[in-house]
Length: 331
Image (cartoon, rainbow, N blue to C red; front, side):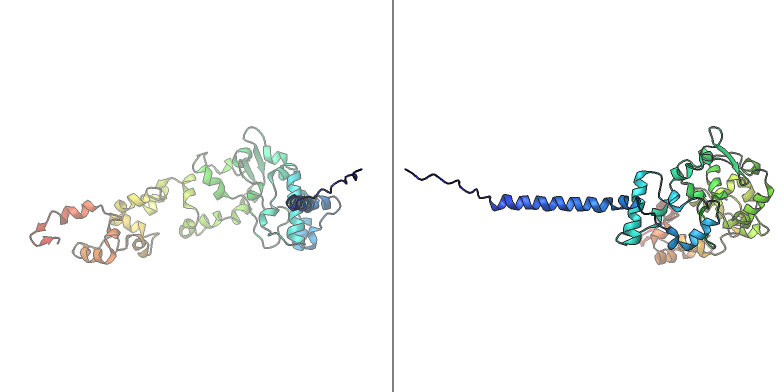
């Protein structure tokens, strides 16, 4: 009788065994990453950070502001689940563990957060969203399209003493109104009938510098592109001559104006330093009376390219090519 056969032991090859081990390790790593990533959300359910422990000055200023009853998280954490999660992750990994970099952008307040409490300021009245307040009347829905609330209302919650808030300014309004004339010269179209607030705003703006008692010397300190919103070009030309305010064609047309001695004198009322012209032209501008006799020397000194900034090659050829002598061209 033959002996019964014993079951053979199955030997697993080393290669499949290593693959199985690697798969287990990868699974554990993925689970670990998921747990760590979800940790902020878990902590959020049991812990509320005390922002005032570090941001002491901001917390004190917030308690004295119109937003005294609003919590820090109500504005900065965001109104959506994704923003809340991102804020918690920033708090834990950036502020507490300090393993990720921080930026001021992470503290931005979203428009949706502002409009959750201020819907009237967002929609206003009518299609344009007209809003009147703080001495101003503004087509809020039109003027704020695509803008951040904090661009005009920055620092509303906790402006620390000495800080300058982001705020709406007349220059920002005129930048658009100068291209889309809405009778900007009529002050009452934007400034509501509130003389005290209008005077206070005037005293704190650059407008008080450019239009104040010393306006003749200081009006050029503003954004000259906005002048035409209220002033016609002829208003400027009375003192400065043609082409003021300068337009896009100033580079190609200013030479004709500067060629007139009377006009050139008006140019000098702003451009007092002769180096202002020489910085582009490379030579004395306008050219002095004896320049024709010395221009060859100047051309060698500065290079032909400098001359061609203003002159076409044909300007040179009209004299030089027409006077060709046996000994060669030139004067």
